[in-house]
Image 1 (cartoon, helix red, strand yellow):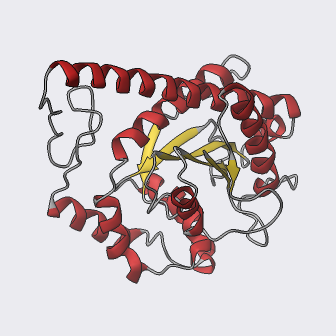
Image 2 (cartoon, rainbow, N blue to C red; image 1 turned 30 degrees about the horizontal axis):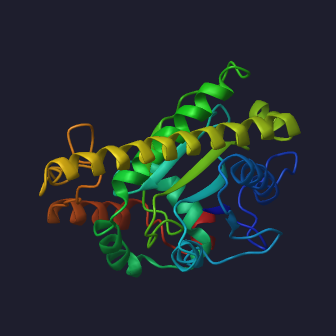
Length: 286
């Protein structure tokens, strides 16, 4: 399993008003999560970074392929111009035309150095991703666990749900992959919580439960699928309709179909209103 603490090195990511840096916060939470996974799931954990160094975004999902990992989880801290924004949210790689979701992708993609001219090739990679369904299921499990845990101790906690956006750090991954925003450094109350060791451990515990629950369900599904397939030779799962990520009516491993109009709309929207792959300086000026 690959665990990716967002940002690092000279690219500091989000910084709170008190000076709490995202790169330090997420490294701590990621290492706490890694210990839980190693202890309780007997799974090897590989970190994209274990200190304050910067690893190119494109190299992080590539590591999952080289190491033959089964999951990829990238952990970040959020920031918003609206100080009232609060709560965790979990993303998987897919198309979107939602301005707010593209803004998050713009911020997280800024260090990649990609330009909007690279957009078409990246969109095509998303379109042919084989793990959208599994990634969405992983995101749902993790987000549910986060809200269930954090809402017990934080009355302001909101269920921000699972979302989809084109993140460079997830593009090209061949395993179920998600990006988790564990909270807002721009929110004064949440910032105070994120500075506390016990709250960071609570986040790590919730992330672990979400991952463990997903892996348990996936294991049960694989066992059931094998049993049914053996009883009924030639059984196949019905693919999902075009432009739709699989849901309860679609096979969990069915191929994804995207209409040309869907790809064109996403490319046009991103190019016109929020070119999320523009250089960091341009993003900072917005």
